Amino acid sequence: MDALIRTRIDSDLKDRATAILHDCGLNMSTALRMFVEQVVIQEGLPFDVKRKPSAELLKAMEEANTLKAAGYPGIFNSTDDLMDSLDDGK
Image 1 (tube, one colour):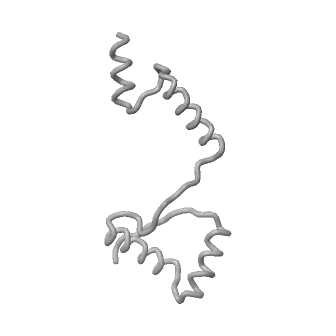
Image 2 (cartoon, one colour):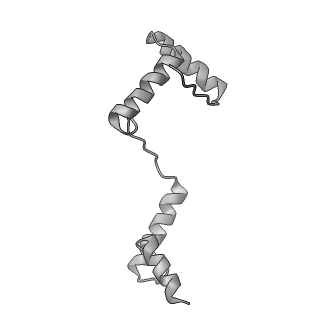
Image 3 (tube, one colour):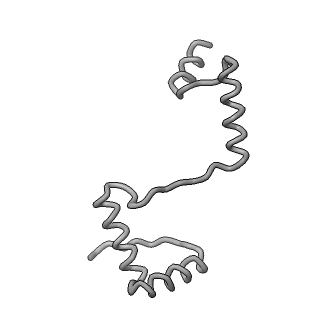
């Protein structure tokens, strides 16, 4: 092996992960190597990445949907539609 990967993470997070990996019979280097191998095998992350939208984002999305349903002209379905609208204003 000839490549080195370096990254900074919170020391508490590292300590907690190290303890869990130790209980699994792994060290951090082996676990990270396994992760990278799975990224290649899966051609992407080997797990789902989900994020629960914040209350603020949900409220903004609801407001946008309300405006769109009312036919508000400043709501676009895509960036192409937005750009076309800007081009029309020239």
